[in-house]
Image (cartoon, rainbow, N blue to C red; front, side, top):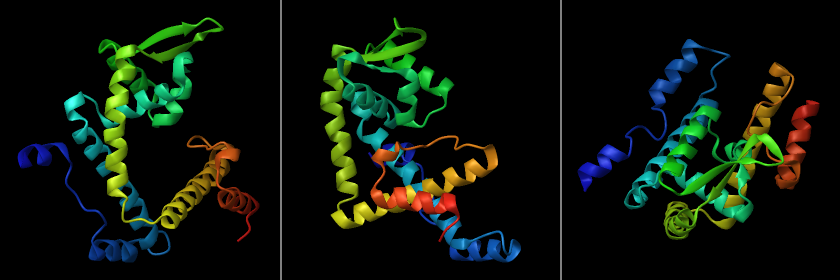
Length: 209
């Protein structure tokens, strides 16, 4: 079992070693911010760990972190299904990779793909009965894993963390707006953002502090 865990879950630092960070700060003064670098690294390492452990706990269902995220997004949209272009917003996956992932689920008879009668350019993804049954069983396993991993965070700490992550994304939106003329991705509908995040986004756009 230990051998399986080592093969399945990638190994690596949770945060960058202090001497590594300080060395880069000396090499790139004014450009490199140690705190920003650590936050970025820790977000990436945590995301990788979430994906790896999710895939591991779902091995017996022959699912991965990506496939359970796809299934639950389609599941929640009910019998009408959802356009594959909309599905991509839920899983942060490039279009070509998303298409391959959906086709893999289709081969397992977990989803179907059909052309939207109202828009021949759009593909609608729906769960099959088999896909719904599997999601009913597998998703609670994934949800309990997330809940267990975050049990040390209080409710207020979770809300604070979500707000802080939202503010980082707001910062990227402003940066992309300045560079490309528009924010490219990872956009949250304004009404879905916590009030504090909407206010912070407005301050960032206006250059206020």
